[in-house]
Amino acid sequence: MNRSHKGDHSDKCQPTFSVLLVVLALTLVGCATTGDVEQQIVASKTDPYESFNRKMFGFNDSVDNYVAEPISNAYKWITPQFMQTGVFNFFNNLKNVNVVINDVLQAKFAQSAEDTGRFAINSTVGLGGLFDVAKHVGLEQNEEDFDQTLAVWGVPQGSYLVLPILGPSTARGIPGSIFDTAANPASYIGMPVQLLSLLNARASAEGALKFIDEAALDPYVFTRESFLQWRNHLATDGNSEASFDMDGLDDELLDDGNGAASSQGSLDGANANDKSGLDLRLDEKTKEIEQAPR
Amino acid sequence: MLLKNMKLAAVFIFILCGTVNAFALDEGGATAKQVVEKFQVDLIDVMKAGKKLGYAGRYDKLKDPVSNSHELTKIARIVVGKEWEKLSEEQQQKLVDVFSRLSIASYAHNFKDYSGESFVFDSEEETTRGGVVVHSHLVIPGDKPVKFDYMLKEKGNSWRIINIIANGVSDLALKRSEYTTILQREGFDVLISKINEKIDNYSKQ
Image 1: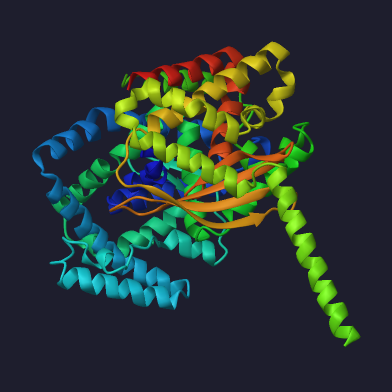
Image 2: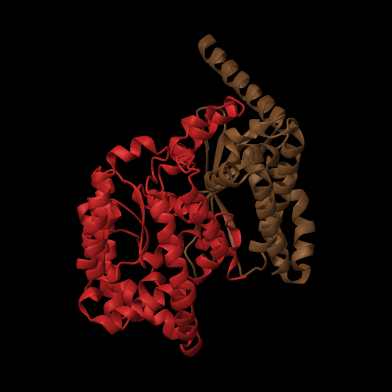
């Protein structure tokens, strides 16, 4: 049932190293503002910094192969499953403080009451969040964050960016992550605890990462597309993606595939006709990395 | 009294038309919902026998259900976008062939065992251009349900799946981005060999 984990890879990019993040955000927001002119030249709308992003993706992949994955495997080997679940539940419960804030910011008041109840139940009966009791009384975990709030407020998503260590994000996702980090109590506990959170996030993302490795012909494009679609799904609470998708595809089918593809800007955006030597070299590099684990 | 009779007659005619319509639908092949539900039943059946069947067994069992419910030729055509026109006829045939095998193989690989999962139908919706979207979700015991939205198009007198959107991630859009990128940058042969490599890997695990 790997399919179900398709979107879960966002776990990997949970904001944790707050200081690093701020520094990165400053440099990258800088890039984002100076890149406007460039955007018209490059065919891709969502990914104008593809060559930079591919480098980062390759870097993250190496870090994951040589550092994160071995440590995560060791962690899984020495830690019993119930403890892993407990750790996951603990951090997930703390995240609910942020979820409730964002519920309110998005004017989802009924949901904010539910999520407050969820936090209260798990913090008390669930022994400080170690057990997800709320799930069993019908209060499912909701996914809300400041990036989604900004989307609801009408802030455009901006360019796709791959951040070092933290993974996929967007121009809008960076201020989002800073806010989320600040609003998460786990950020104030201290480094060892945050490392545990990161380790546990990597361990739970194992299925999704394996799925990408198995299914993707081009892991970079696969990750980018699924990340952007997943974020869009969350931001619109699952209400827009179907119709959005239909329109573009219907055009295509009506015209029987004759050049109608241009109407699918965001989908074709991926295909910047970038045949520079740099990109080809990078492609080969990505291919190597893709083949390395096998 | 006359008015009442006319009303009755009108109602009667409506009912008659209704039954005739329903009958015509039955004659004309499966509805979109029926196509999706039949495929889901077949899939769950294969999952239940998954371990016993092994990969090869699951592949054989799924071959017909996937080919009969999915419009694989059209899907293969859409995922390469504008590049389709640039391919020779043999290349197009080769792509459809390899892509069909990949689709069946990925089902056989990803739906390999059963732990109480079930599909639940939610709703059906017509799109502006005559397509139908069937909304459903997969219930997984002890886990969050996964939304499965199927987009179907009419083919002849039946309906065929042309896209699956799982938890908001469109399979067609995802593949399209990958395939067109590889075709444009690395060419047809690389695309085919990458697909074959995936099928090989699926069969080994």
